[in-house]
Length: 71
Image 1: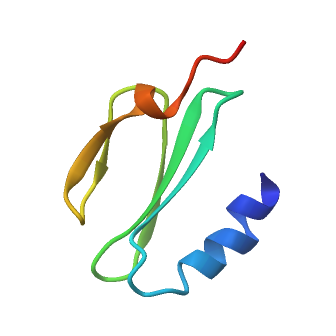
Image 2: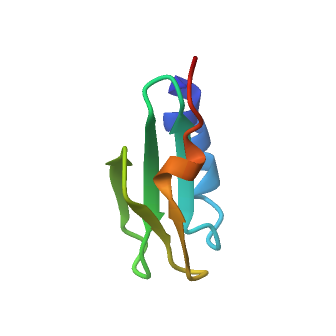
């Protein structure tokens, strides 16, 4: 997980066309959403419920659909 939040995050956002980077952590039941705006600023949200706005390209995903039940 540390590699996903450090090395991979930097590498993915070195590609100008990538706007969203999601880390799904089923054991903690959270989705970490990194989002780059038009000016290049990256913001991070941690979601357990609700909807995830992926604009662009322009669609919404319910967080519950990304988090399967953990036994």
